Amino acid sequence: MRIGVAYSDGVRQTWLRIDVPDNVNVMEAIERSGVLGMFPSIDLDAQKVGIFGKVVKLDAPLKAGDRVEIYRPITCDPTQVPRRNGMEGDE
Image (cartoon, rainbow, N blue to C red; front, side, top):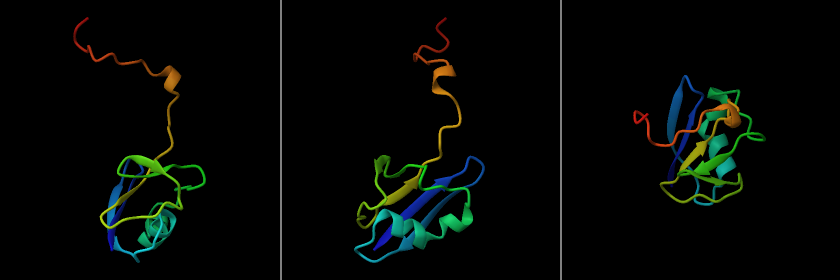
């Protein structure tokens, strides 16, 4: 079956489409894709992964057409970022 693996480090981004066996899980797909070699800074022990924007575990099974996404860690302190209220320009 064909699936996708997507990752961006903020500078480079990649979306790999690969063929995998029917019983593959997220971790196996990531390993087979070669993305770990392309982005050695990926740390799957610390970073979350998902399928189409929904966070999943590394042992989650995949279906044909799924897009595995590897999420970057948060690089700013959310308590220090001004909250947006959707009223930009209405001051």
